[in-house]
Amino acid sequence: MIPYGKQFLRQDDIDAVVETLNSDYLTTGPKVKAFEDALAEYCEVKYCLAVANGTAALHLASLVLLNKDDKVLTTPNSFLATSNAILYAGAKPVFIDIAEDGNIDLDLCEKALQEDPSIKAIYPVAFSGHMIDQDKLKHLRETYTVTILEDCAHAIGAKDGDVKAASCTNSDISILSFHPVKHMTTGEGGAITTNSKEIYEKLLTLRGHGMVKTPEMKPWEYEMRELGFNYRITDIQCALGISQLKKLDSFIERRIELVKKYDDTFKETLVKPLYTYNGKSSYHLYVVQVDFSKLSLTKVDLFNRLREKSIGIQLHYIPINKQPYYRSLGYGDEKTPVMDKYYEECFSLPMYPKMSDEEQSYVIESLFEVLNA
Ligand SMILES: *Cc1c(COP(=O)(O)O)cnc(C)c1O
Image 1 (cartoon, rainbow, N blue to C red):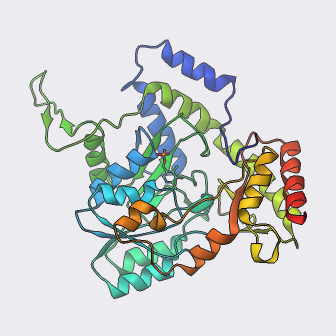
Image 2: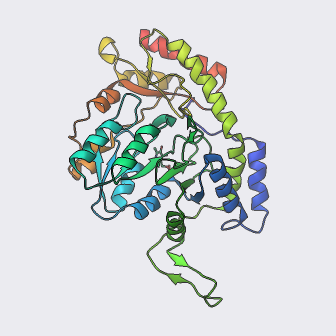
């Protein structure tokens, strides 16, 4: 099976994990801090906290940024976790349509902020690795009193001019995920980045049960000052993360080769890339658009026929606001024409650093064979 994405592990990654398994610390040891420091340096941000997974990162970030009933603008085009985290904090997601690049439409966000000054925050997602427009974020942050969380689960390694993904240059917090389908993996894992010491310290406490220990306290003493969680990541996972991070740039370089090949192949065909190589993405997904109304096959047919050929194309994403749970909360009928069209026409082709030229050629041949049948 050729999936839409998968991890790339080599012997040095395995050796790093084994070394940690043989060490004194399996968790809360030196690898966690070393991984956090390496991530902060890579993302060009002051503070980084590694956690159990990207969803835990979103949860803790939301507890710090939001209060009950706060309204938060977010995108329907993401994995469930982005807006679920808003619900975890007792706040209210407000779904805004996407722009042509698949990211939330920040002009529509501005309109919403003008119409409703009580909106507390925006949760944009750097969808498919494409940077959230930093000039617009900066403008929104300077013009309105709005908190911004960037979901960079797809975007580590992306850059727009001087601004790196998850650097929090124009946001309060960013989150990362290290699930195996993402750019680099720790098995399960995630991280939160911020330039605010205050936010970092709150996150640190919340990651560990809300427990605080200060030098003034008796040797055995700790205080629980708020309700926290165990969202720690292990040293075993962080050892893998440190090893993977060293190779991240080479992973992205390989993705760029695959992107350019797809771009060239689809020129003047019925397969339209969501965007072509532009230097502003880390290319987590290669999304294409096909106008099925002009074809004799449906999107379901396409998925089924490619799966018969062991090619796992995927759809990123089903609009979150139309999920049954969200419908039960009264969502689902927002006007999102761009997202609706996207959902009808788009799908993601396999792309990952371990993909060979032969595998990519097989995907391309099979795609055209099925579309032209
Ligand atoms: C993967 C992902 C998450 C959640 O990360 P996990 O590590 O799987 O919990 C959040 N947001 C987006 C956009 C993602 O793709």
